[in-house]
Image (cartoon, rainbow, N blue to C red; front, side, top):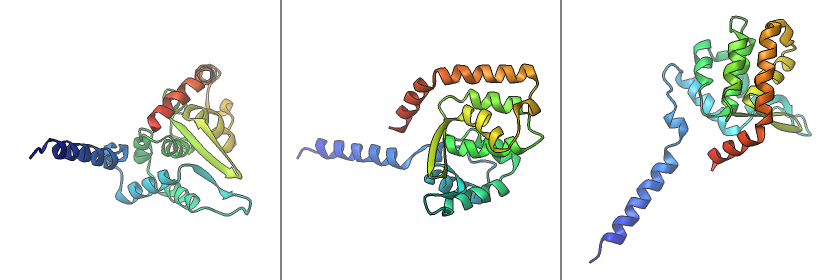
Length: 186
């Protein structure tokens, strides 16, 4: 009896099961992040976007907004810093947003780190509209507007010029970054 086809089929099955059960959530180093925060981050990521309080034609508040609110109220600074390394751009977006609101955090360093993370995209839904941002664009342009803070208030003229120059360079290559990002989704 020839066992080679059965053996080959068994190997293929093992590889497929490993591929589908072993994703980047399992690879992320969760040390320093509390279990209830981890569970909330995983649930937050499954929804796929940061959301405003009211979405859709009926203006309903989605469960995602309550998750997001809980994370905003419960993540500590060390967890936020760690989550800026998380593989998902929307999770990074919520981490950066909370770090942005922290007056002790150096905004220039925060902006530079976000701008250098070129393969992360943040999905945001507000009302009936949803949009995607490169992480750096979200952090440098959207967050200051959303928090009603001018870059003039938090950066020197030289810092602002440098940050906006990096943003312009990233925006020129946005389509390239999107193509590379889409490759990671396959």
